[in-house]
Amino acid sequence: MWGKKGASEKRRAYMRQWRALNREKCRLDSQKWYARLCEQDPSRSRRYHRRAHLKYTFGMTLEEYDELLLAQEGVCAVCRREETSLRRGVVKSLDVDHDHKTGEIRGLLCSACNTALGLLQDDPLRIRALSNYIERK
Image (cartoon, rainbow, N blue to C red; front, side):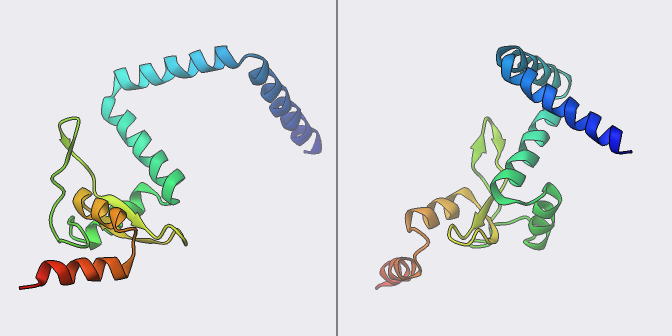
């Protein structure tokens, strides 16, 4: 048992060293793999990137995103409307809204609400002031 673990550690060390010495070959191999993946099933490629983006950026799985989307009935948490913005001719997914200080996920927003919130720098005073301004008679 100990021998196997040592062997696998040696193999990993060897592969790390080999990849460091053969960066260009590794890069080309990755590009070929990705091109083949996109050719075979473009929707699989999109799902792969969507999963990776959610996990890396927000620490959430696609399943957690889908649960949140279902809880919000598929609409924006602020305006309660469906997303209408397009990306490459396809309606975008709702954006994940999160607190930039704590990283806590607050909900899913349409592009318009997410952009507005970002421009107002998530500042409740600015948001209230804008609301008061727009509701003046």
